[in-house]
Image (cartoon, rainbow, N blue to C red; front, side, top):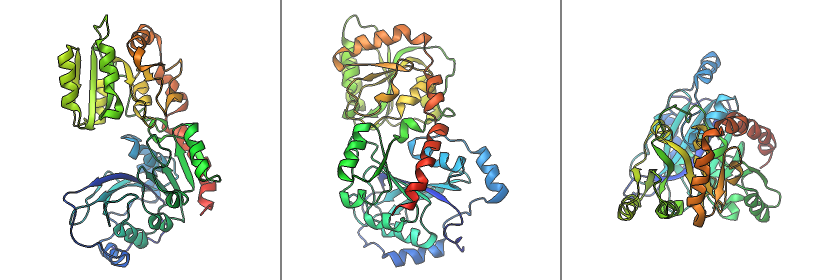
Length: 394
């Protein structure tokens, strides 16, 4: 299959820091040139639609899924790119898996050169050499090495740590980005302290690219007082919720929807020992439609963490119609918790915060507040205004 000339199709690529495949391979990595030749023989996969077919696919495209997908799909939906790709890293022998999710989204996993982050991949460099760099590159978390960013210098290179540290990559890597998205103004200040001329925007991709097509009210009975949707990991601070439920007068019913993580059995055991009325779902996580259905069974949503990077669930709860109670010491994302959408409380007073918000939840309309300012159509317009300047840099 002969690839299209670089630049013919504008691609937005999101590189997550997920590392898949086990055990690590023993064979040495290919050279970039070997990988380029192999990619040219294999081809990039099905040709994306163009012309009228592309416009039809855009009209039919739904911006849904998790934070990895929503920014990329929003860029395609609004014409900033013609197709989207999600890239991960592959450590095992053999080719990394790939799949096509509809005509406009492809997922790939590229072989790693080494386990250490920021990740290096001759496989990824060979793909870029064969088919050209993306028009928009968003790198998340632990990042990729300088060689990959240099290979993508023709487009807009964007970084978001999706965590409390604003930058989780070394200075020689972060200096190569054109734009850094942050979760709070203090993070933007931290970026400028390292790189005084770096463009920044408070635009955490999880809550800012909210999808009303994915999360919405269902009008079902409210069986639970509170719901907490979070990974089963210590930084999500489920202990704050369990401590609050144990304080008198008690009696609140809670639902915990656990994604990934190692604490599921520990949390179940602690709730059972304390005699708390908590229903647990997962891990593993459940599909987004089921998350929406589960959230709809509760009256308010909770964010208990402190050392967390603007969790996407903040606006996802709100789009499902749930006001949000957040830990007042949450480091990133409190800008979404307003009198219209919820309230904050200290860990030691989380029980009082839950009861106070439950008392007024029925008269609140948090979905309307999110629809007016934080859904993906609003945010992608803000992003588009930043991209021309970013594209001219580097």
